[in-house]
Amino acid sequence: MVPAAARGATTVPSHDVELARWRERIRTGLWFVPLVITTAAAMLAGVTIAIDHRVTAGAPLAFDGDSGSATEVLSTVAASTLTFTVLVFSITILALQLASSQISPRVLRLFLRDRGSQAALGVFVATFLFAFIALQSVREGAGGRDQFVPGYTITVTFLLVVITLATFVYYVDHVAHAVRAVSIIESAAGETRAAIEANFPLTRPPVVTGDPPGGTATMVIANRRPDVVVGFDEDDLVALAHQYQCVLRLLPQVGDYVPTAAPLVEVYGGDGRLPTDTVLDHIGIGNERTMAQDVAFGFRQLVDIAEKALSPAINDPTTALQAIDRLHDLLRRLAGRPWPTGRLADDDGRLRVAFPVAGWDGLVLLSFTEIRLFGAGSMQVARRLRASLDDLLGCVPDDRRDVLEREMARLETDVERLYRHDDDRQLARRADEQGLGS
Image 1: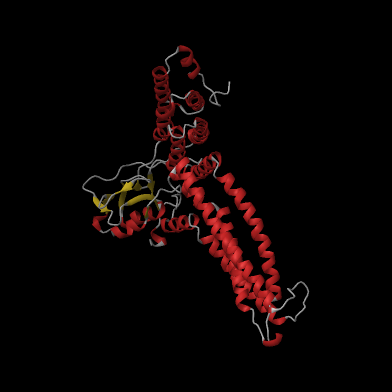
Image 2: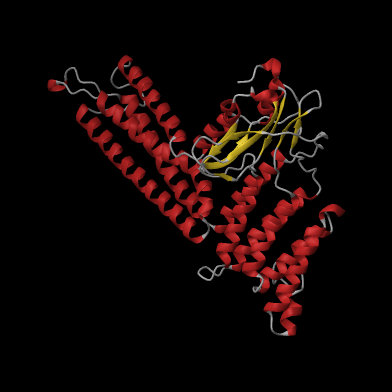
């Protein structure tokens, strides 16, 4: 870790890559939320059993039965909730398979991050564990003497059964809505909007002048497993470069795959004193792109959904239009925002870190080109793409118009080529927010 005294550039963003890695692992894991809920259930069972040891038989609201009845009740609850848990797992796996085959493999992470499914699984496992712990506390005595029946614990078990049934009904309804294409598209778009707010602030970034110093650069080699760059810790890298009086130039863009022993960072200056392992500690890698610092990944997911919908096997242009709607909205949000410069300076105003940034042109091409190539032959898609481009041309600054005009020209060429009849060409050239809504 870089000492606080060596830090510079107080306005530089901060992304702790190790914290981001654990946050992503927890959010996409089916274990964390159930673990928290089941731990709470185990603690609750301990508390209620301790209360039962202190109260006398026949206490109000407590289960009033012998040890045999208590054992039968708790065994039934434990067995039935375990069956519920298996059923939930089966429904979840089926939903994942359906979404992967019909929409896009990239959307699986949206299901894994779904808090509703994680909480439902946690409630079922927690009820089973609570009943199992309560069952172990039941003590049978000869002739009814020295027996122990946890009356309040069994009452709480009944309450948990009611909660489990309500959760099961909620879960079935939740999954039925979650697997709808529009829900998946909106989830991907919503996450991308949040990434835009985090990575493209409305405040203009500080101007950093100057280039990395000349001379031969020292290469930092990716000496770890080949994987995807998921992010980097800007302020720590700036502080590190400030401490060793050097300039760091990151070669791959966030979202790029880095093969074995590929150059990762160029180091200018510093007399070779900079420890390369420390640099690598502040660059996050993973086996899949994430949205924390990779806005383009959100666009990629929506484009993949549109392409899958336009494939001959699916042939669902209306779903593609729903994806185009969100892409249009995302580009509109970016249209007037200041763009990151990919250059970070310390508090002295000296360039310390340079890195590649996904540009406006790249995001426009990502949003429209593949969908146009797959779907320009669909009247709905051609008209909706034209409406999006027309709207964006009316709201972007002049320096961002060129790529939109070129994409419009390509759409015009494709319409001319794909539609044989003049009437169809004229119809396809008409901008329409609904595809064929008027």
